[in-house]
Image 1 (cartoon, one colour):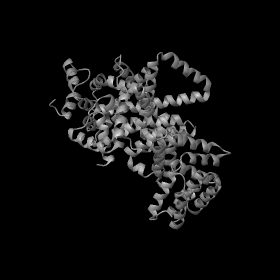
Image 2 (tube, one colour; image 1 turned 90 degrees about the vertical axis):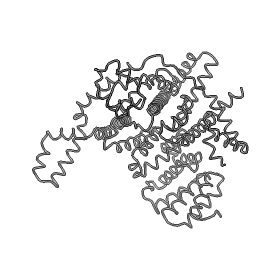
Image 3 (spheres, chains in turn green, red; image 1 turned 90 degrees about the horizontal axis):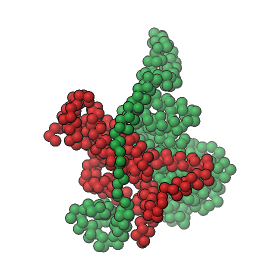
Image 4 (cartoon, each protein chain N blue to C red; image 1 turned 180 degrees about the horizontal axis):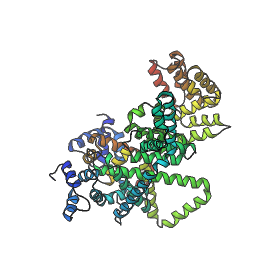
Length: 349
Length: 222
């Protein structure tokens, strides 16, 4: 039996949850596998070291919960009363758009209807709670109050999960957490929730997928790699060298790829990732040639190889780059290059 | 209980909260979690009160294990029940109510920890030295014996390690390790197979091992 197959049995055995048949199966494997035997013993020692005594609750929570519930309901009722005014700005934008469209495309009687002031309030009432929150979050973001914008969207998503705009609000919330607040743990949870609850929206956003992968990887190091990348990006004078340092610390990761992309931007003086193709390739090659650290050079070789392979349709050039990386002292980069060569159907030279 | 969940809902929704007699209350107390959750979904407040009474100790214990102090744990426990009340429409009868409630609790506690961590970082940025002094004073005055210091250290390390787990891994670990659920019960609660629960549990234990390795190996040598 393979080690991979007994992992679940090892976990269950730690808590004595095996059937007799499973016990026999596991013991048979452990007798012939010292690694799994050591693993099982280590997990048993660890679980024994985590205390399980429960802290006791000395009071009844119900009165406080009921009080908070009444307060929240009163607050919510007050918000309902004020909603048309709170969300006047997004409503006004919608009205302006509708008025414009009506002049362009609709008969005059309809236009006259829209022009009456009472219809503005009616439209504000027609906005769903989550649409209102999206408008409010945009307004707050324009004033750089990202924390309140995030909380506004979080509350709307939590309170109105059936609203038609909730997926959009979830996506916006994740984006604010990731790119504006740099709250990476929250951003990870938000993108995960987006993938779980609104898979169609998630799958249609390449940026969300990329960010979720980046966060999932950085999470293993308590997001230290992403914080290091942010710090390097903030360093105006030594940005290139700082980005090289990030690659040195986290070679072969998504963060290292992002750092390489940034180095190409620094060299080109513009966003080459958006340009793609030859311009991106030229910038990445110039950045590679400017590197002072061998490990950074190999990371950029890998990136250049990917561009040749995926954007320039030049497998021969891609292979040359990957062959350079295979020789790297860094085992992670060398392994990635071997994988890329295998995908091209080649062996390392 | 012979009634189907739908019949129970009809029974409970048919009664106004104010007009409930002591016998009705006794009936509510005898209902299973899933029946109470269905009744709450249909708007029955008594069902919610019964769920709070029934599970507040467990919710508080989970909150305390993750936050490490009474004040935060009380706040997290209250907020978790409020969330359960507001989000009950999202609860699915296929999964167990308690696991769902404890998942809300762990998420709420993790939010609290992150907020606390951010506040500490912000304070450190404002006045690094002053805050360090303050922290040392808090530790010095609140822990007065070697054994307590050790217990405090272990508690802090375990709390930090639990935040590294994914939400499902954390739920599975908490239900098995602290709450003593059988694997088959956990599978029912979170709506997956026993085999998947074992895999989640193994991954959770491996991650905890990575985080806590030095702690228990040192402890073991002592």
